[in-house]
Length: 152
Image (cartoon, rainbow, N blue to C red; front, side, top):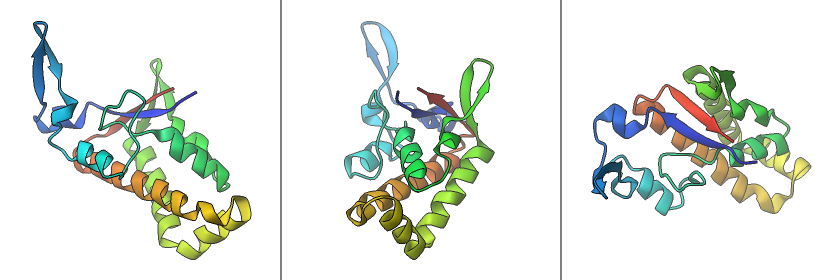
């Protein structure tokens, strides 16, 4: 089972910068022309995208599994059921961001956790996942997103 975080509404809609194309007479969002930095972040290896390759989506399962492996509750990444959809609200995102930031700032403590619960050679990947989650959450909040749909 996967877990993608889908900003709702999309950051480009909030910012009024939706890159549209017309295909077969239909107006479609063209994520290849994303003006908000998500495509560049993905292409530079800054964050994992959702399974459908939409640049502003985040592959939340990566972070959920990592938090579980480090001894934290990764289920917090799956959101709360609300009217038939699972949602992370701004407060939830800020709590996840605070934990991720704390793990990044306490490098020695995080290294110790990785050594105890994983393998020392995993440290670089662990830091990349934490840095990518931090960047993504900060970016969507900065762009005015206050809810994330959790699709799994």
